[in-house]
Image (cartoon, rainbow, N blue to C red):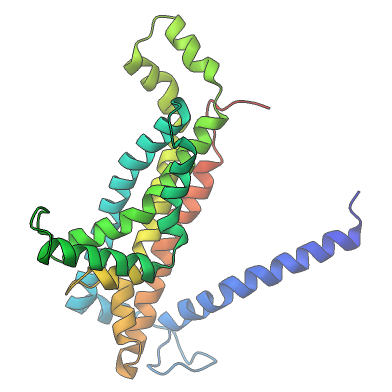
Length: 273
């Protein structure tokens, strides 16, 4: 049985970890509403002026729109490939089956600079040296491909975990009752995996939206919001706008992650222990 002192100790340690992770983000969020163009504490006043300035800047709007498009496209690719891989690993036995998870996890585990550099080298090779490969100039699509390499594993892990928690007798019962493959998927499989799939897609979007390293090596002249921050962080006159952009990136990352955590705790027709 836990003692009162142990509960207090765990509570204090948890609070310290949360403060360590979130305090810098809260400071950035506060500075986004700072009336002064100079970062100083305490804040001299509050304003939404810098939000208007950021929105009126065409480079910020184009970077935001590019980040959203890349995130949505990369998440869409991740949904298709990740769910297909999860179903294949869960339902079939084949040579190298146990290695699939490792191969999918590796791009996410590697530093982003390594993945980006590898993709950049491959695209350059395909464009200049390999006549048998279709040319693929650096563009939004190369960013999407780069982000999809690590977004796939998020959807794959979510869907595979849900499938493993789902009783196989549900599918067997559906087939015994005369349902075909489509009906079984619609009435049994889809209600079971839907929240895990949506949660994985939201988390994949969040990972794509705030990625900077892979984008740097695969973007060419394209600029996403993280790249905009990276390029302008040392410009003092741009610092208030950078704070606003950073606040938007934090908000548009935290919301999908929070929704993903909420959804992945909903198991539908999962196996009960």
